[in-house]
Image 1 (tube, one colour):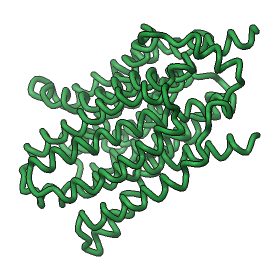
Image 2: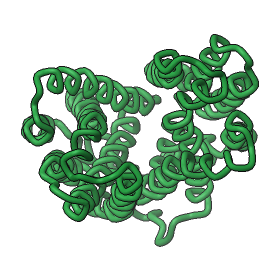
Image 3: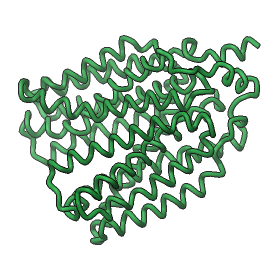
Amino acid sequence: MDRYLRAGRLATFAYFTLNGFLMGMWIVHIPGIEHRAGISHALLGWLLLLLGAGAFAGMQATGPLTDRFGSRTVVPLSAALCSAALVLPGLAANAWTLGAALLVLGVGNGCLDVSMNAHAVQVEQGYRRPVMSAFHAAFSLGGVLASLVGARTLGWHWSPVTTLGTVALVGLAVTAFAAPALLRPAEARRPVEAAVAVVNAPRRTPRHIWALATLALMIMLSEGVANDWSALHLRNVLDAPAATAALAYGSFATTMTLGRLLADRVAARFGPVAILRHGASVAALGLTAAALSPWIPLALIGWAVFGAGLSGCVPQLFSAAGHTDQGAAGTNVSRVAGLGYLGMLAGPAVIGPMTHVLPLNLTLFLPVLCCVIAAATAAIVRPSRHAPARLETEAV
């Protein structure tokens, strides 16, 4: 394997881990930042929408920029922006400054999300086999690292601005260190492939990409529900102790991470369609068991199975979008990632109002339905249907 390709893969791991670490450090310090800004929980909820709005805007802007200037240029700039922006919430003294800080942090996160996924597609093209899921596992591991580091610095009574400022400097250092190893387009695909991709670059987003984006919305909506409602489900529905209820999200996140570490090998053997179809089906069964279970242990197992099933689904959608057209990989990934991110935000928000008319456990059948739809339409990620550039190259 070409040493440049191996170095590019390691650099991609570094940026995915960095992204998960940066956002995890923000999450760990939310209580302290909220206290410093002197705002209520309700107002914080509204301000968090600015984080989401900034991320969505950054995603949509970065896709075309990545296609034009290349991920080798855009990834380090995005990582530097996200790293530097991390310190801003720690400096916020009121709601206005916190809102502005979250908007900038969201833009940086969105830019890095899309550009690093576009580079991951480039690495996968060079390897000629699935490698996307492992990158997403690295993002999850970055979040785990953030929880450990954050717990330690909070134990030392470091202020949020001190911790986040230090982490920002570390992020800038990682960005500078990893940037030279990022791939140039010629290092990941043959010249004839690059030429075909440029010729075939679409002027507008094809319907196939919007279909992938819709599935991403459904899958990430389901993931968002697990993030925000799994512990509440055990606590409110099954009357579990607070410490036990917290294990619901822990079991989901653990199997999600482990599943992503294994998904590339499974995808290489059975293909992306099998990953999405069977993964979404398993997720639907797991969440159904959790929702209907009268027993805490079975509910915990259900949430764990739900995480395992979902683990490989989103990477297949991102990979399919990136390989649809190599000349527009950034734009296509931005569409799928952007709509998926909206689903991540919308899932928890939709469940809340539904609990006014349905018991919480029954509202969980909304993500179950999303998983069933994803399983039924899994053929959309079949390589022969979304890689015209590669097929034409082989024909030449």
